Length: 299
Ligand SMILES: C[S@@+](CC[C@H](N)C(=O)[O-])C[C@H]1O[C@@H](n2cnc3c(N)ncnc32)[C@H](O)[C@@H]1O
Image (cartoon, rainbow, N blue to C red; front, side, top):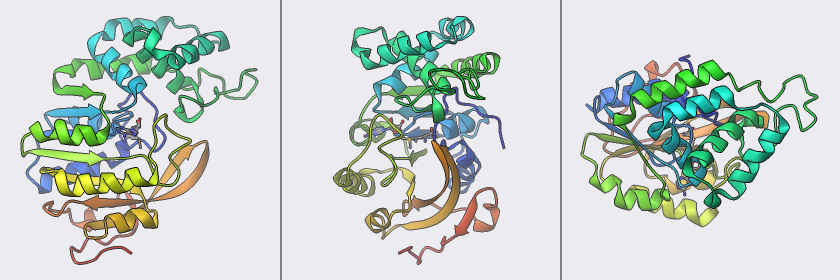
């Protein structure tokens, strides 16, 4: 397992899927092209693909202003960001300051919002921005708030991302708007990976989440409007499987760690024009039920 490239922790972060996406790039002559995440979050897979030189540029979009502010801050002023990582205090009063900044983000400079996002993501349980602090307010647990705030390692990750800033574009749009506006402008040698909020477990994890109608509308937009090759992952809820029933897909197991550890089943869906890797090469993801044959749909 490659070391984590993203400075952010993300429940269900997708860096572990990078080898699979790399195979898709190989199979479709998309190596050295553009790679897009309309729901970027911590963008673990995107960073892994860029740093391993599988793709030449990555495009990260997220509708959360806090997440966008984080990417904006590390890409435009990495030195200041790293100084802040080195010098920040690690106590509950500092945590309260960052909570307040995110609560009133429009009153603050984008850099401060970006740093507060990062701070809370690193010191809160499971990285959830609205969640509680590791070790509790009394800091009496075995793990304290600095458990995931490994300063030197995080500085190294920020510096590595910043060195590649010329290959990273960021935006702060709703994914559907992003599809209609930005992806239309990208060339054919582009792969888009959609990782929308889950159908079932989304609301507790992220600041933004979808309702049923949003998932249905998104399915229409992705299947009817996207010209480039795309892949999508979701929790394998029946409603999601039926929204994409005419596409090829497979279900796999992925271990998550958000608040409580649970075994989640995810579905991968592919656009019709994509050549799929041979499933025998997919041993790095635990595919319980692989249905890669183009004629088989999961019901
Ligand atoms: C499942 S996470 C993505 C995780 C990411 N793949 C990773 O590995 O870190 C979903 C992300 O989508 C963002 N998001 C939620 N609703 C969105 C929307 N309507 N448009 C764009 N981004 C959205 C959230 O802020 C969150 O960062």
